[in-house]
Amino acid sequence: DTVLTQSPALAVSPGERVTISCRASESVSTGMHWYQQKPGQQPKLLIYGASNLESGVPARFSGSGSGTDFTLTIDPVEADDTATYFCQQSWNDFTFGSGTKLEIK
Amino acid sequence: QVTLKESGPGMLQPSKTLSLTCSFSGFSLSTSGMVVSWIRQPSGKSLEWLAAIDWDGDKYYNPSLKSRLTVSKDTSNTQVFLKITSVDIADTATYYCARGATSFDYWGQGVMVTVSS
Image (tube, rainbow over all chains, first blue to last red; front, side, top):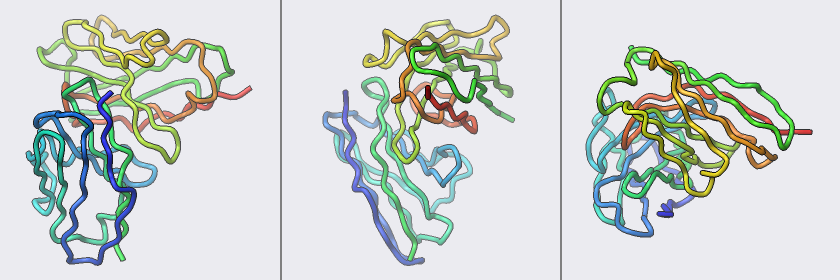
């Protein structure tokens, strides 16, 4: 299995820039995708193919990386961005990261 | 408008077979490139991909669960099914179906399944 490692939690203030990282245990090329999940809701696709913004997602969200190291950036952060963010790889079957819980102070 | 909706038993006993249905609209699974997956999430935990079926009827399974999973679709290509045999408490989760071949762009609202005696 390709294991995806994410930091468990972050807290930032509105208007700040936040980066959420995801490290893969082996190269996944650009087969990395990011989701936002709010409590009681299904995940929502934000970024696909490492850096492509899903239709309808605000341009405040961006993704970068290739190989084993990937980043989701939100700039500027808004209060509504409070959620858990998951990375997911599609290079070797499908696996998800453990999620990063983002708190807006 | 693409929508997916999962349905299932809600609760079942250990050792039984779990049967889930994903009903969708706004796209056809007969269209080349279309894939529907099943993904689950225990409460407060991360997501686990289980299985997928594509437009051509090819099936894909999580290797760690493959022996217990069967994915299928109906002939009208508007429903996808998942069976999980010999369930135990560890199978308690919210089960989602989602569309996509690499990333998952549309998800159902999920159906909660509890395994309990």
